[in-house]
Image (cartoon, rainbow, N blue to C red):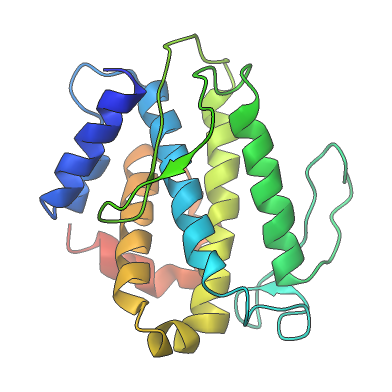
Length: 211
């Protein structure tokens, strides 16, 4: 299956309501292709979710990128900013989304020509992509792991700093479904180290344990 066909597979399995089934690698499919298609989906998802909060997640309200009092995240990309710097939450997310988009647009990392990412109105508001089946680089999974680790930090910030606002917007069911899908996928493929998940450990255990 190419990217567009994998996308249809994801839509079909999500439509069945079985998130565990939705994250599994389809039989006979290439792991890297599956990781690539889903990386784009989760990038779009988090972008959309955070986008609903930009009015409330401001440099004044969120002067640091934190997940509760114990966890603070500093930004570095290893290229433009080599030494981690303290920035506001909205600035961190801006840096992050720009950095991820740069990775997705780099054909030496994501060899399918992902092109313009169209956001569809499916169950989770994911994007659609088309893959051309070019080879992936040897360090592809490490790049994907860094993307997912940093996307998790946006979820951690939303849950710790903005969950009440999400509830008032009546978006908590959507947020929880997106996060559950995200955690089941990262758990299935070992994409985030356990220590990185500590800010939301109890919530994550409630997702993983029933399965």
